[in-house]
Length: 356
Image 1 (cartoon, rainbow, N blue to C red):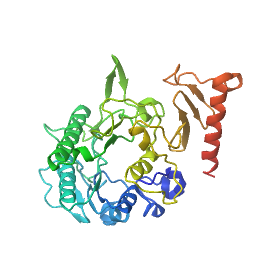
Image 2: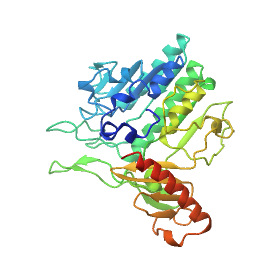
Image 3: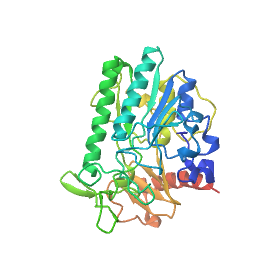
Image 4: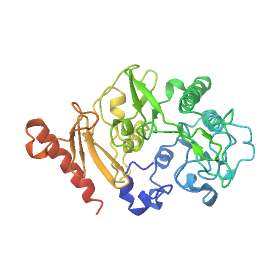
């Protein structure tokens, strides 16, 4: 949202489900409005209890919004949705992801009809299991007395993205629209599926198969199963289809990237993000991204393509130890490993030092 690491905002930045006051006015929505874009957000908004702050999305730069009431009700079937500051009363029997997608398509079509470029931000509810948000009862089932399993959520997510792209084609702006897809964490270890005879929510494990190997979900972990995620960018005629880039990107990089694509100059706000816009078009970045930063619940690390250093001192050679089973002995480092350790230690010292 801000291109800054959460800890930059102090306690407000670390509050789960909150958003710092200092983040209002400098968000990705604000930046795109500055560039003359109509702005909208739909789907997941875990930055406030919406019933207590109906206008918060507007204060972070969005002209329109369609967002489920986080921890107020369901996000998928019979969803609890706030649209432009009002609670919708037409969602019974409806599916949340379809409503969020339809909202964004309508927004893009209307913006185009008005001759205005648009920025559509879609933090999807998918793929996330249901939560027990209703006191004394459970959110609506998907079918057959159960919620969606993870495979079904992935399939629905793919369908929703397809509908958005089809919408761009129908509106006639596909060749003039940059589409970026990413996610905020790896696959979860488990996902709620049904309620047993004791009234308990049952959460079976989630497994993937990659290169013939079974890989458990790693959401919340610091290794690649929890922190290495997809980044897919598509823009017909502008981005070479099928090209693969090895540059590192972290989530702070998206704001400066879309701002550069929109032609904006710097607004003078200190941000951790570094634009990867040139990379999209086959060029080199103006600012290198030698490492990314990861933190969760007081644990933190910095990671280069083949190396990772934790704040407690564990140092890994990811090329030879991708599962981080055997930390290197720091006192015995030499050559490239010693140099990389020093680089990452300097980066980590700077970040951790700024926390104090």
